[in-house]
Image 1 (cartoon, one colour):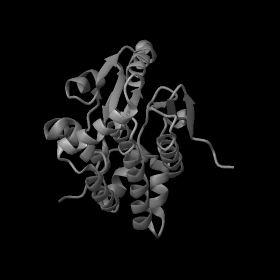
Image 2 (cartoon, one colour; image 1 turned 90 degrees about the vertical axis):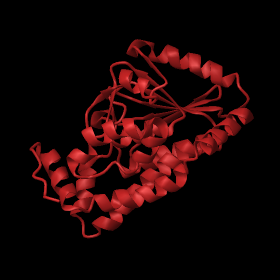
Image 3 (tube, helix red, strand yellow; image 1 turned 180 degrees about the vertical axis):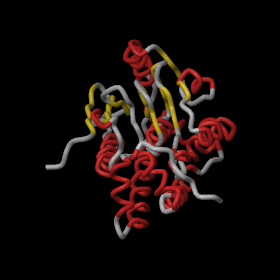
Image 4 (spheres, one colour; image 1 turned 90 degrees about the horizontal axis):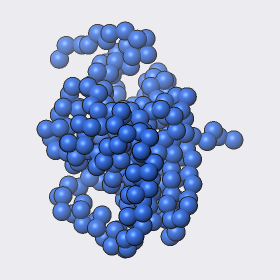
Length: 263
């Protein structure tokens, strides 16, 4: 029997989907992404579900991709094929979240890093604790945050996206709220009560009207996120095959400074 890495509970029209790998900081394996995608799709197709919330157990929302598994893929003979499959699996997750007719809400109780940021930004609404942060350290590991970039630019514009993507710095959710990436930031102890206020408000609305509103928001933004994400999956896979990607990953796992190649 496979390990259960994602929990799903439905109560009073709300599907709560929780990343449940706290001992590994909720780092995403292919199996975990698959379970998460399935949970989102099952919730999306359930006529009783009117809102989907994404949460996480432990002190970290999501540390991004499991780098040990990524290294294992890189060591195999069919590395490029495996990297593309990994990227497509993650792309499917983001599209599943984006395309649900129900509103989706991320409750960010701790740091969201790399691929974890993508999961948050795929949600319609983001409620976060004031001591959490976002970080996109991919460039410091020799790869690109290709899959997160379309969502980041869509949510906050190129200027703020450049800060996160190029600096690799940790940015507190209090700053993220000024950039439009978090809709409300509260002390951690108030996260649950603030979420309940949002849930009550959303459940008062017409499900059909909310679904139509979600579609109109995407149309008015003039951003074909679906196509951008599918193209980004191929770019992400290609970036993992570079010499710098191998060096960045090895350096991170060996806890040393990477030695980058020259351009």
